[in-house]
Every structure is written in C-alpha cells, then in structure tokens.
Image (cartoon, rainbow, N blue to C red; front, top):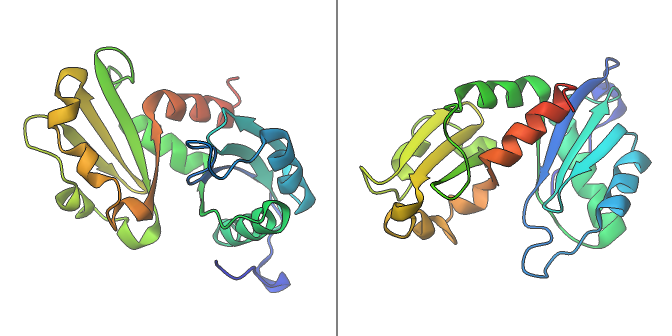
Length: 194
C-alpha cells in the first residue's frame, strides 16, 4: 500500500477523476457494496461521488490533494472500511478523454467483437508493453495510448487470440481491465454528458 500524502502535498482546485478498483465483486470475492463505497470516498474528502456498475468505477472530484496522492488515500480508506487491500488506479477526466479519443469508433464489446481497455499502472505504462502482451498476430489488434492499451478481437478469434494467457501473469497484476462500453460510459460521466 502506498503512504498517504502530507498536508504540504495539497492543492486547491477541484478536478474530476475516476478511481478504477482492481478485483472487487468478482466471482463472489472482495465484495464491496457501491453505496458504502461512495460513503468511504466522501469520508476522506472526495465530492460529487458516483459509481458506475458494480466492478469498481468511481467518479468523483477532489480539490484537496494532487492526483498523485489520491490512490494511496483511497486504498487506505478501503482497507479501513472493508478490511481489503484493493489496488486503486486514478485517472483524470483529461486522461480518460485521451484514451477515449484513441478508441476506434467502430470497436465495441458486443456479439461481433470483444474490445477492452487495459488500464496500466506506472511501472508498465510505456509503448513497449505491447511487446509483452501474449496476443497472436493477425487475431487481435492492440493500441497503446499513455495510461492504457486498447485491445480489439473478433469474437470468433477470442479463444485463439492468446489474450487468456495474460491472466495470472506479472503483467496482468499491473493493470485493471474495463470493456470499451464501460470506458465510453465513464468518459460520458466525467464529461458531464450523463
């Protein structure tokens, strides 16, 4: 767990963010009710808190601390309130907008295509991460944008694409995944379109 910031790290202008929690409410493990999670965020000074679906997407504003301090504050609050050590990745409205802009408009997560955003922790956030993905050429397409990799696969090729080999790897532990439909919704919420 990261250490919380000191008061000298504070700033004053409120900015919109999304907190992406890794590994909650999956297969009956790490259960966190969204209404209680919102209260945890509010308890540590976050405002305009809203959640989107049950997989740990929390939209909020924070004027008191810089973005670099938020993950540690939120991880500590979750540990105190739920007794769980949950990694939290925080992205600003602008960072989400950049990922959204890089997403091919015809990619969707649906019957014909599987398309996901692999949000990256800092230690793997570089273009060379594409070389570490176990994707088979010609069966999947991956695009790097700072902070994320967007992966698109025709549904007919998902089982042969190599994507399943990512699960359980060291690289997998340094990311949290959302489908592109969720990315679009988060972008809309952060942009005030919803």
